[in-house]
Length: 137
Image 1: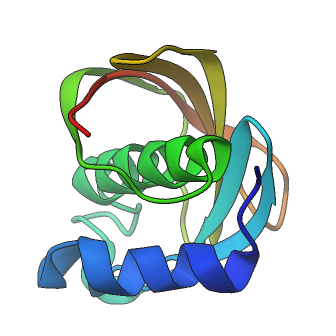
Image 2 (image 1 turned 180 degrees about the vertical axis):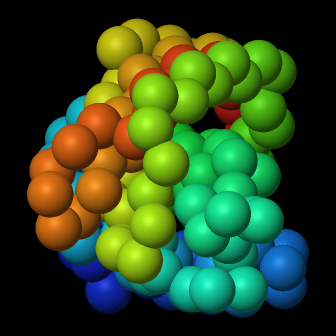
């Protein structure tokens, strides 16, 4: 049972730490096994040289996975990151980032996802991530 974007935005606003909320993530779309979030460009998230920081991108990938799992499960369940691996391919400067998390396996106790992070203006791939989650509830 897929969530609505409004329900997913409510999960964002109630289930994450305040510093994650400060990233300004917005749910763009949801499917049975995926979620697309927008990470708005902000100079305060940029590192020296003007590129969006890897820390912000990794947090966005992690958060998108939680929303994808929630969409697939029909609501939020407690979960924790077991593993995240991120490969950065190019800097994003002055553009929002679209973060798409696709579940590759959703079990009763574990979830696996592949995430792409792309420049929203050019479509260029900025990073890829893979995550593993333990589902606690």
